[in-house]
Amino acid sequence: MRKRIISILLFACVVTGIGVVQIMHSKGSEKQTEQTVTNQPIAFGSVYEITENNFVKGLDHDFTQEELEIWNEVYQDGSVQEEQGYLLDGAQKYMIHLYDADGNEVLEYVLDGNGQLYDGKKNGQAVRNETIKNMLEKIISKNNRRKLK
Image (tube, rainbow, N blue to C red; front, side, top):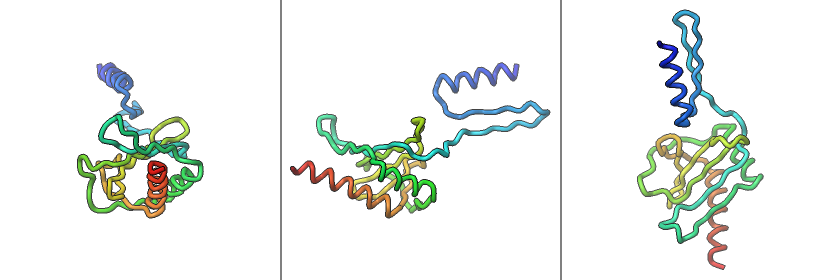
């Protein structure tokens, strides 16, 4: 009966798209749960602007290979530091999504109108990394110059 319930729950997880894999070992009372985590480097990603409506086109930038190398350096060395504060509802200006080669999302960040970066996977925790901040500012300012032409 217990195995049937577990199989039904695992099937429900697969159907609903929950990305947690459970491994059950039946050696007596020992049970172990593991969660899949990707350690693959960032292969692609983008930053896009959240606009007031769908008629106004904002920034939509796919990261270049050079920019992805910067993201990977920061991702590997863990130099993104948490700061005090959380993202307020409605303050999102830009969304940043980064993926591994298999298309699994590795990182998600949100940038507000003041240039503050937030971790999209940690309940909007404010974070800081000067290298990333400078890179994003260059991308945004380059896009703004194009709009003026």
